[in-house]
Length: 638
Image 1 (cartoon, rainbow, N blue to C red):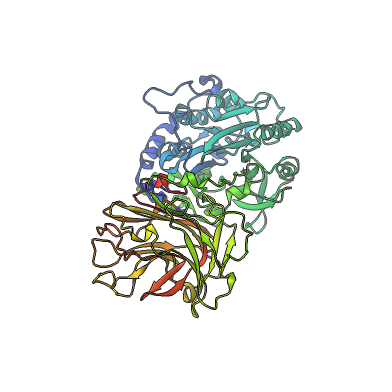
Image 2: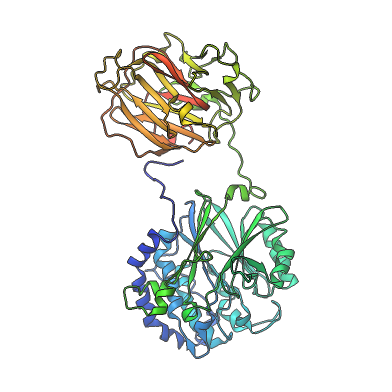
């Protein structure tokens, strides 16, 4: 649900506004700073960095990292092999520092929650190579930004497994350093395998950072970590897992990668994404695990590109609202100097736009994680809970009815507000009884777990609808001080504008002409909430203070999806909301109250010229009318 004070961002298109934004802010300064510090960093020996550890606390003038843990959008940054930048006497810290400063400068607008380095940090695994890189990572340490690193084959210069003992890699990036970060979860006794936890999109996520060659004990530890976090989605990062096949379009397991798949990944449904470097070019694939669910396996590595890949980073932009991970690959070091005279190769490497570098992964997170962390369905809520002050009518269509059964010809739907505005069934003569049927389908946030299916169409006009009785108190209401009208609806897959457009969710009998309104078509009804030919929602109502209709328009609605609509008038203006979000076409016209002739309200029916003209085609759930303006937090979906 949306609040009008916190409207959602538009869909993220990889490579669009955010890249333009980052070029215009921050990166130029980062490039200048790293260019100035890179050579100085190279002179910092490992011995000058005791245990290569971060300080316990950030300086007073530097704020700690504070990602938005509730936003449905967040970013995980991936940095692959940087080894050619740290190769003996050839030390180039500036590209790495530029990428790390990108994280600091754009952490808020990207909502960056974590960084994973994929190994082969250095070429020879020597202390003199790790020293400058370790110094660069102090940029993140000082702000307590969560990150993980894994050992690649070049970092440890050994084909042995994680029982190899102490190495310069472990001295620089071992648990003694990482445990001071808020995301650190734990490590194997040897220190080469670690796990990390971060909160994002309102839940916990786990990064399992595995050694280049985890031992049997290391893999057993990984299984235990997953078991200790049974409801947590897991991302596995390691140096070697998949590589690009001969076509370059698909990734395949290496022999070691197949071992990891068989011994760990396939049998643990919580693992949904793996990231590795080592090989090039970049590639990806999906494999079905033992539970029958997709695991996305990605290799990213640019060390073969100009300037050793210039410490390029991958941005994995998770968007749980759109069920998508948008992936983008950029070089902050080159982007930060885009205003300068870049050389020809830099211009080619400024960002990667191939299909394996800039892409989106459709992923229904709730469905994918349902096997280990199902989201409990919201239960029905008692009608009494929905009777907020000012409620003048409340109808719902739940109960003991068999889904798909016909509604009785003598159907009477009680007004649960207690104001005696009951609904009675009416039908177009000759319409089959099944044109009004009970259903157990409902909006997931609907109080009543049931609906009515209206099978109306034209031509010829056929179907059924509901109406209030003559003399019902609601018929005479003018709502001079304001109102809130709410309804749940769903359109079927066969909804067609030619046969079903302008079928009404809700309306009032009585025409503009009969109501003394002088503008517009005099045969139009005084009030209707209809499904236009979009299909979209239209609220067209004659206020007390206007000579004709004032219209609010919603956007096009997807079929086979439940929607909530609310129309709110505060005594001055009328605003339509769809799923709690204000629509664009809300007129600024001053509107007070609703004109009436004292005639019945219709549910599922629309009159023109005082004659039934259109009928609803689709499902209708709970409907509530309140004699005052409600805030979004008090809607039935809240």
